[in-house]
Amino acid sequence: MQRRSIHIDEFAHASPIPNASRIGNLIASGFIRGTDPATGKLAATLQEQCALMFGHMKRCVEKGGGRAEDIIKVTIWVEKIDRKPINEEWVKVFPDPESRPARQVCVMEMEPGVAIQCEFLAVVS
Image (cartoon, rainbow, N blue to C red; front, side, top):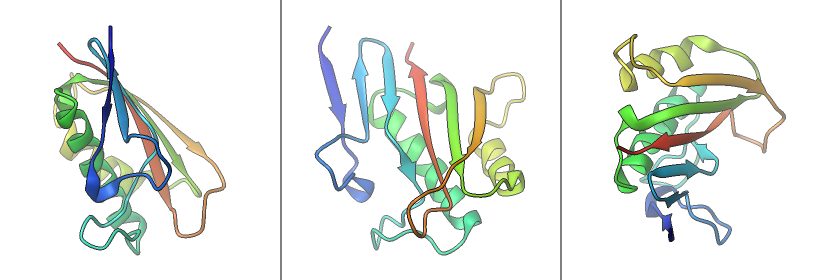
């Protein structure tokens, strides 16, 4: 099986790494943050970063040939636990309570301005 890099220009990494990678029916992402695609800068609030992050995650899996429904696990890192904005965006991306991926939220010290970031694993049917 050949690996294929997934690049999204509007929120590409500064380092020479793709946003995600696909081998066969698996897609795995690197860190996805809440950057504004118009400016390339982090959004000002946790709520805004959260909405952008989940939107980027969805675009990433779609560019890899999948759908949000194919995401099986999401790991989220925050500087401070505040599940309200996470849960609000979570149910927008995954509205069916009988078909949501596993999720883990971890506290971690992050770069200045970063309030939240995630990575995902998807199994594309």
